[in-house]
Image (cartoon, rainbow, N blue to C red):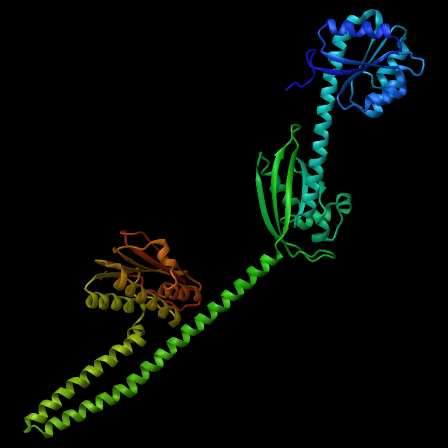
Amino acid sequence: MDTSPTTDTPLNIVVVEDSATDFELLTLRLKAQGWAATFTRVETPEALRDALADETLAAVISDHQLPSMTSLDALAMVRAANPYLPFLVVSGTIGQEVAVAAMRAGADDYIMKDDLGRLTPALRRALAMGAARSRQREAEAKLVESEARFRALAANLPGVVFELQGTGKELSLVYVNEGCRRLFGMTPEDILADSRLFLELVAPDGRDQMAKLLGSAQSPAAYVNWVRNVEPHPGVTAEWVEVAARARRLPSGTTIWDCVVYDVTPQKSAEHELRHSRQELRDLATHLTKVREEEREAIAREIHDDVGSTLNAVKFDLAWLRAQLVDNATLGAKLKQMDQLVDSAIHSSTRIMHDLRPGILDEGIVASLEWQARSFEQRMGIACAFRCSHEDIMLDRDCAVALFRICQEALNNVAKHARAATVDISLAATDARLDLEVRDDGVGVAPGDMRKMDCFGLRGMRERALSLGGALRVSGAPLHGTVIAVWLPREGAAHRDARQPAMAS
C-alpha cells in the first residue's frame, strides 16, 4: 500500500534561501501546480536547526550558496537530524561536481532555478522515496525487535535451540542459543567454532545417521523426532535428550532445520523407576499367585488326607451302628439321616478339593480344559464347546495352572455377566507358543468396562499371562459378545504334542 504524500496532502516544507524573491517564485510555482503546503524560509544554520526540530517537517529544499552556509552544510545538518528526510537542491550556480557531491552525500535530487518545471516531479519522487525509507526503517526496527525477542525467548527456554543448514547430505550448524551452556557446558561461540562434538551428542546414532535421517525428510513442514542416550562427557549434565526438528526450504533451494533439544533425563529416570516398580509388583504378584497355588494344594491335601479320611471313618462307624441297631427303627432312621449328612460333607469336601487343586490337571491341559467346558455346560446350562489343535499338549505345571485358571475365570465371567447362549473354547499350540481363546455370544463388553476399578478378575488373568511372558487381550462390543484371548510362550516348557487332530466336544 502506497502511503507517500501527494500534491493535495498538507505538507510542511522548509526552504533554505537567502533571496526572498527566489523563495516567493519557488512557492508560487509549487502552489500553482497544486501543492497544499506550508512553506517556511530559513537562511541561517540556527534557523534551520530550529526548523528541523518540527516533527511534522516533510521536506527541505535548499539553495546551494548562502552567505552563512552551502547546500552541503544544510544537507549535513538535515541528515544529522533525520537521515530519511527528503532533501532537494535548487540553485542557479551549482556545478556538476558540486551536484555529484550533494547526491553522494544523500541529496535526493538537484534542480536548476531556470528549470523549475522539474521541481514538482522531483519533489514527488523525493517524498515517495522518503516514505519508502521511513517504512524500511520501521520494518528494520521491527525486525531488530523481533530478533531480540526471539533471542531472549530462546535463551530462556529449558532446552537448546539450534539451526542446521543443509544442501544434499551436508549439514552445517548456523545458530545455537545460550541453552547449550546449561545442558552441555559449552558456549555458543565454542560450538559454532567446532560443531562436531555438539552434533555427535544430539545425533540419533552419530552425525552421519542424522544427516541421512534429515536428508530423507526434506519436504516442506517435514517433522523429525528422536530420543537418544548421551554418553558421559565433561560438562554434560544430560543423560537423555529428545530432539525435535522441522524443515523449511529457502528460495535458494537450501534446507534449514529448526531444532530443539530437551533434557528428558528426569522423564527417563521416572520411566525406568516406573518400569522397575511395575516389574517388582509383577514379580510379587507372580510370587503370591505361586504361593496361593501351593497353599491351595496344601489345603486340598489336608482336606483329602485328614477331613476326607475322618469323614470316611465316620461313615464306616455309622454303617456299623446301623447294623447293630437294625431292630430299632427310630435310631435306624436317625442313623440314616446322619449317613446322608456325612455323604453331603464328603461331596462338599471333594468339590472344595477340586476347586482348590483340580486333580484333572494331572491328566494334562487338554483333558483339564475339556473337563472344565463339560462341567460348565452341566452346571450352567449353557452350551460350551471345546476344540484343540492337538490330542495332547505337555506343559510345565506353572503354564498349565495359568491356562486352567484363566479359562476358569473367563467362564466365571460368562456365568456372571454375559447372559450368553453359547461359549466356544479353543486351544492352539505351536513349537513357540500357546493360544487360548474363550468366545461367547452374550451382551458384550464396552471399552470403559475393562477400566473399572473392580475388574480384579481381568487384572488377575492379565497378570498371570504377563508373569509367564505372555499377554491377554479382551475384545468385543455391546450386543456382539466378548472374546478373551491369551497367549503364552512355550520356551522352557517340556512339551510333547500328539500330531493327530483333536475331536471337538
